Length: 361
Ligand code: SAM
Ligand code: SF4
Ligand code: SF4
Image (cartoon, rainbow, N blue to C red; front, side, top):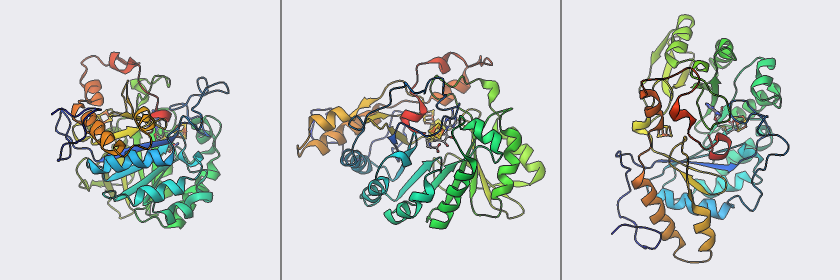
């Protein structure tokens, strides 16, 4: 029987989607607000004083997030990443980490942050069971950094945040995310790499993506990973490493001289939809099955309509299972396969997509 909002029994086996992909990762956006205004994510022109962000009651509370995560884990999710907006702006985040990290089936809870608040929270997050931290850092040059954080970020505060994360001793380590934009910060990539060679901190170089519709993305703004890799290898020879698990998003390389490893996330030039096992939960409880989705499913309505009902969990599980089994998303592959790929964004890129700060990067 087709499971839907009214059925009680979810299928006994974990669901796979229309392309045979299992559900493994859940990204949870805990906060749509941010203390930065990176032009590629939340350009100030849109996210100004008058922009209406979610109010506290509109966001899922920790009980609701935990309920969704528990059911997602029952369907196969093993990894959870907390993100935003800026997740450390969400009051009490270590408490949420503590609840999620003990859920049956969850073996990895991670965080992506701009790092500014890490000196305050890193020890508590570590104690609460957070395994891994990724800090976004686009440039080690103060002026470029200021530009890429929309004039709100302070480079030294982020560097202190990275130090605090390293000192806290997260079991799964600390990574850096660097979004590379041609002519903006690509010349500084070697400086970032030089800074973190020999430190055990892995830098992941991310192709600038056409997430949302407000960042003015153009194809010519990206630096394909192959080009970047060739530039880097000319200075520090690299060799590829095998993926650590099926569906790993970053292609890993190690410095031949033993200085550590780096990763390339090439969703524009080498899309990896075929392995994508990721769902996303927005801070107001919509579930999305692709970063480039145009619509999501409102789980908050379900959670709140069924409050205090013992069957809510089973209903939620059935809905999640149905959503996943109907999933056929492969946006990045469709974008890349388009024969015409004009310089300033093609047809598919102009769809009304959900914004990154809201859906969670
Ligand atoms: N505020 C946190 C941070 O910046 O780490 C977490 C949320 S942010 C949306 C998550 C990640 O998405 C960051 O590493 C950010 O650089 C990346 N990101 C945002 N917009 C992007 C874009 N248009 N293309 C590629 N990556 C992007
Ligand atoms: Fe904020 Fe992160 Fe988006 Fe920058 S990338 S505006 S820090 S949510
Ligand atoms: Fe997954 Fe969508 Fe990204 Fe493809 S485009 S890898 S389906 S999130």
